[in-house]
Length: 308
Image (cartoon, rainbow, N blue to C red; front, side, top):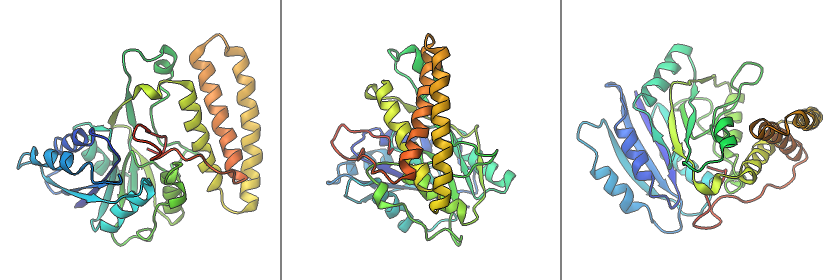
């Protein structure tokens, strides 16, 4: 079984830890793993970091690392470069600030075989700093799981995924460059893959862990992210009739969430839950009427946007 793992990076030294965690994972003996690191910075700023990490891999790691410089500060451009380079049976995705659990890859592979799935998505579990607000930890609002709709997984994310690739009906799909700065490109991509017949599954045992930066420890940051998530879901609704139906339903849900806030105003975590949920549905409304999305990716060296 050949797997190409895509890790797109943009000015993050943490990509070295991501690479080392993958190499330290329990890679099944019959798996040939190649790590493709795509540097999206204007200059090849991650080249030495990646080379140093690759040099620290033991000979028994069971994988090798390739570095590619694809400038543009557009995450879709970087992901598409990885897809163009990929020639394996399967593609995996991780973010450049994540640490894979030892059983991460083996769990994804086992789940795909057990459920006959073409794509499997695991959770990204946040690691909160000590000074994180209590309501944020209680609500675990930085955790990323793929949602279930009507009891099924219909789209996915690139922070923790395994996708069947070579020879599939969807191997010609690419990430939308229009979403490469605003985010949501992975939601749209996997939505199209699903529409082409791919069977999706969720694997809660395949965990990766992501330290939460302090500039994300605010309700404002969470609201911006949830609104953008909703926008993308609204945009991929389909034709005018499907969008109209989704718009009406999302507006009703947003209003319902607003009402649910009132009884829990004294409970910060519950209040934030309903506010964030309502904001996501408001974003769906914005996506259904094609309001423009804000550019959140690659705007400045310190920007670490929801597009990730």
